[in-house]
Image 1 (spheres, rainbow, N blue to C red):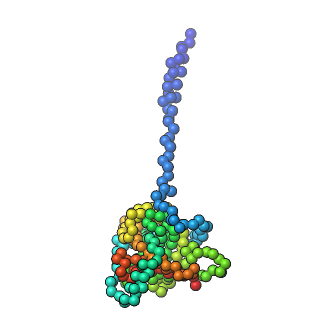
Image 2 (image 1 turned 90 degrees about the vertical axis):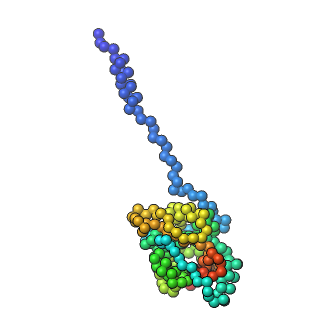
Image 3 (image 1 turned 180 degrees about the vertical axis):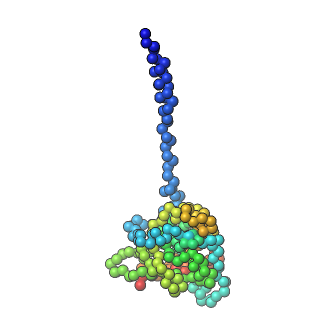
Length: 254
């Protein structure tokens, strides 16, 4: 007589069941592509031209701190005010946001309304502190120029991928059109309820800490005036609407 093996078999079965682990829970859905921003009503599908050579240069995107941009003095020539009021009364008003990290370059996002997805994102080579200094001195004029295209070319002016940039008459590098990044959309989500104003948001840069890691913004209404197929202008509107624009941006083919 051999000993019964039932207890041994039961023991090995219990041991096997004790080390069986349940399947891992399913991963939560990724929120990186979630956005509540709406499609612009006028947005048309088209092939976007992207210039990648400048992409790495702008990835550090540091910017404005408390971002206090001075207002224009209320005084000024009557002719200028009448001209500005005429523009303010007749143009197509859109939402524009300048944003970036404290020590980085500025990006411009244009939206139909603050609740819409960006219709245009431009990365500008001007440093944030430089733009602040220019605006502290008074009105700022930014000109973005590109080469004229043949008459048969139907590329719209705002679809141009690369611009030569001038700030108050001084060449200041380039402007690059690109698709909105996840960080861009996150900024627009956070500012969805803001129509006008300036401030600071927590940045997501892992390489920059402290105040330099904060992402500053300035949002305002812009009057979008189309002069021709080769000329468009953005005029920043003041809250009262009764003084000249602090910032004007010219888009031209030359």
